[in-house]
Length: 406
Image (cartoon, rainbow, N blue to C red; front, side):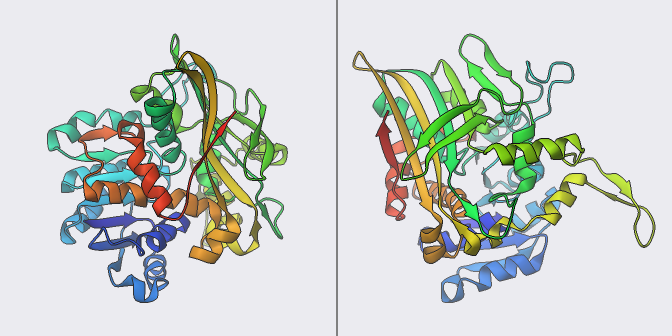
């Protein structure tokens, strides 16, 4: 297998460090708009970097990326950029006859009249509209294969296959007790993506109603997270699992709730009130005259790069899927989870916990595709594949998962 990795930020760099320890691929080309970032990611691997090379690529230039795939004979494109670049990269892979894998799906647009009641354009709609093209080409686009979405969807598949006869609700619950020394506000993941998912109308699925939306940060609940993290208040947030899981798994209700914390929520609300969450450019004075800038890009530029926070970060992050239903005639409720301790991920890989936890899952998926344990054509989510091979291989990577009876 020959892989083109587009994006050499925190998650992309973590992908290289995890993949360097595995023998399943022949070469990984690491491409970024900033060639220095790609070169740094490869150089950091030292002697383990013999199968890696750095290139420059503009993730928004579909033709350029398709050409790069062809020039290096890559079998698969792994997208480690933010969701703005999903569609050009998704298209480039199809143009080049390569498989495609991402960790976040094409962007949504709220309903123009009823944003907090009805869905407009949903996450991933633009990709699923092209499913027939991928099927005709005999190629696989594996979408939403990070940690959330990704591992959380694998947990849902495992629950459906092995743990339940009937599922009433699947609820992804994400929480952490991470702190960052020296910063009052320092998101552990891309602020661009965080603003997008937290301030858009959250989506909920119910079998009798389909997909519908609610107000941001709605339906707060306290969820007790394992391995010492403890109780965290979680709220509804827009996320791909709610759009993916019902396509392959029967459940009466599907939700996603994120443990953000009151201060984090208030900061996001303030950004929204000030219009600083907007992506459309505004005109501001500059030394050489007026310039156009995106307010959200300005916010991102003012905050520390999440990839650089590992040395200041303490605590654990937990991604998991809570499922309730019936097994053998009795009610059952479980929480399937994956916890990463920042101290461990920094010592073992030099990566902070959140980006490492995101990055390990697409690497596991690539290995399953390379070995033929996972195969398919069209646009498919993680729950379209058997869960057991993934969970076993994740454990073999030295990062076991857990299950708690509720």
